[in-house]
Amino acid sequence: MSKKKVVVAFSGGLDTSYTVMKLTQEGYDVYAACANTGGFSAEQLKKNEENAYKLGAVKYVTLDVTQEYYEKSLKYMIFGNVLRNNCYPISVSSERIFQAIAIARYANEIGADAIAHGSTGAGNDQIRFDMTFLVMAPGVEIITLTRDQKLTRKEEVDYLNEHGFTADFTKLKYSYNVGIWGTSICGGELLDPTQGLPEEAYLKHATQQEESLLKITFDKGEIVAVNGEQFDDRVKAIQKIEEIGASYAIGRDANVGDTIIGIKGRVGFEAAAPKLIIEAHRLLEKSTLSKWQQYWKDQVANWYGMFLHESQYLEPVMPDIEAMLTSSQRNVTGTSILKLRPYGFETVGIDSDNDLTKSKLGEYGETQTGWTADEAKGFIKVSSTPLRVYYGIHKDEKR
Image (cartoon, rainbow, N blue to C red):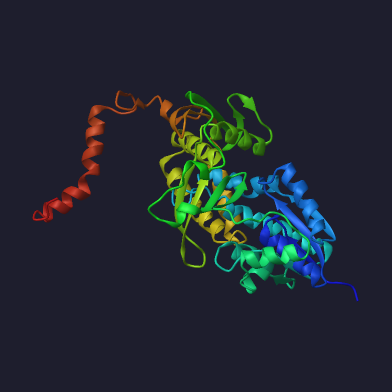
């Protein structure tokens, strides 16, 4: 009889390393698949491949979906200025969805009998992986050893050591998830709600001390230039902004949010590129969108971010929201200017042919040519009519 094929979503960490070896020992043909959404270096991917074969995998593949992740998610998060709780760039949440889609697609391609991942039973990732697999790879068994057996780190490390795999999986004070849209940081002082993260918890540190200007140019909401340097590849543009912003240690914060399973969680992060890009984009939109375009775009963008976070990317309404967000960007073209300094930044201004503040009808607080003084007084009086009616009747109600 041929062995059953199982695809393991392989990050190279302890849980997925244990899963590869354990399933190999149980008689599966293990296909280790690392879905990269921009968080792995070339060196890390090479090490993952080496370790996968040492652990017993019959095949290792890297599934690079960074461009797909941008085109199908990041682009719309920029269009929508999406920040969870007005704070957290939805990085890990959205990355996991696209990693899961890539794994499910690969499992279907090779005719896998099962898919395995290393999520525990206490977080969001188990839901993101399982829900995606159930929809994208129906009928394929889902194996989750760490969750089902409630394995401890010591049990997993001991098993690997006993079977000849001696990589260093020492328990660290912090755990990190590195991606193109930011690095999340868990553990350490964050477990105490009265504390924040110390300097040593961050992976990137301020190397620039002098203030500088950052100019981000958008064309219909997408980044096309950074400080005058043109980019056809939007991913590379994001990476360039991250490089600049990280040198000032910009984008550090901590977020307390609601998990899908109902408990609250606290996560620290450093996300220079998302913070700078979203604020630059928002700044440009203030001058190029109408009041109601901004209002309704914010409403649907909030839902877009919520659905991404709560593993509802495959909900049929998502393309509808994306269509609205895309339409809203038709005039969001121009350059936003930010001033960077260590650990922070401020908005300076924008340069756009679509700047609605350049109207010939009037200049705010200065002059008007589109109406007369008498017309203004009439407009104000008519606008006040509902209030004058109400308080004319209810004279006893005072504010």
